[in-house]
Amino acid sequence: MTTENPRQEKVAVVEEVTAKLIAANAVIITEYRGMSVGQLAALRRQLRPAGAEYKVYKNTLARFAAQNADLGDLADLLVGPSGITFVTGDAAAAAKALRDVAKTNPSLVLKGGVIGGKVITAGDVEALADLPSREVLLARFAGALQAPLVKTAGLLQAIPRNFAYGLKALIEQKEAA
Image 1 (tube, rainbow, N blue to C red):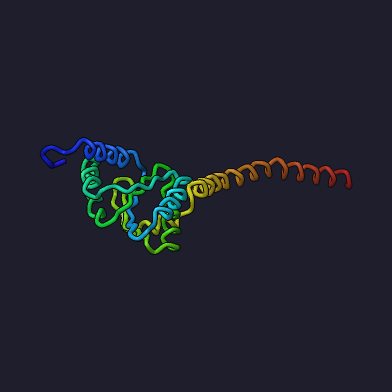
Image 2 (cartoon, rainbow, N blue to C red; image 1 turned 90 degrees about the vertical axis):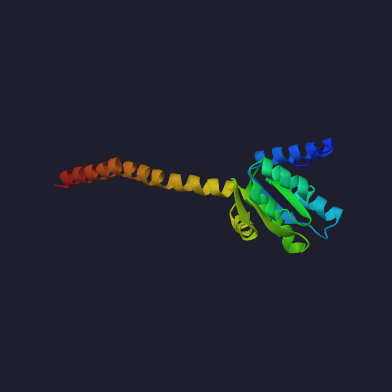
């Protein structure tokens, strides 16, 4: 922090936010102006299954934390009443939950965030929300790996089976003659 003698509480908050920024797979920033405490609690409940946590900090302290976590570009998004979603689980599921709440509650506005150290825009968060969940992607990948193996197994089974059919036809031809 740049002030001469920062209060211990502020230093602790900056350290907490810095640790959460470093530990998170993704960070999504939203504006929550006009949302009630109950609506914010409902948002937090929807984010929990995706491995995400929604927190509100003072922007100045969050900017210091972003600098400490080498995410200085994130500071540009921390303007106005900003809520920070720390995602340690499925980033696509968290983005989907935020987008769904934003559709039903216009007070929640997606601003952008960070994934893999790269700053993303609100449009990128929308695109991330359109991605299938991690489980669906893994199932599709497993299916793609399985398909050639199933074809190979079918071909390997066909060789002795076709040989047996040919041998049977030859035997029947010899017996008929």
